[in-house]
Length: 208
Image (cartoon, rainbow, N blue to C red; front, side):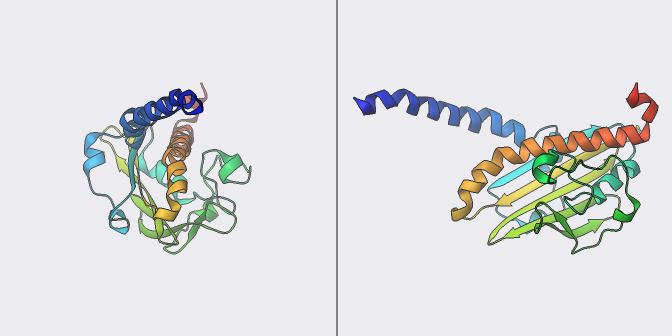
């Protein structure tokens, strides 16, 4: 009798899993990105050759690429400008910067953009004005995050983030949470960068 009573919950769980796998997950893995952006190779792809998660997300920013780029360079929690996302969780409650900070504009390969007080993304590659390759190598699991800016003909900018992750079997439970949590935080981050760059580029227009 007890097993029979649990069957509706089992079926509901299975249906939710299928809905997430077939509908929600494909949508959030390619949120805002064009088919061409999803298909094209990006710097850092080779660091995670067999990902358990691969996401490509994009957003159009009404500002030139040279306005967007400095917001990426100064990213990072705690000692840097923040992640422009949910600061309570990824920046110890300190609000992310709302201005360009000149002293944080010098970024070098090997620098760390903190996600906690002691650890974070290591900068592996820098293509100035174009892309950053950020990498966490975590005990044989690995996550790369690569923001790329591309100028558009009309003076606007496409900002695309590529995330590739591999979680070894003992980290798969963390990976399951990362699967949706990464989207929630990244969407907020991309919208935060967009708002800041547009405000900087056209302060009167965005304040109206």
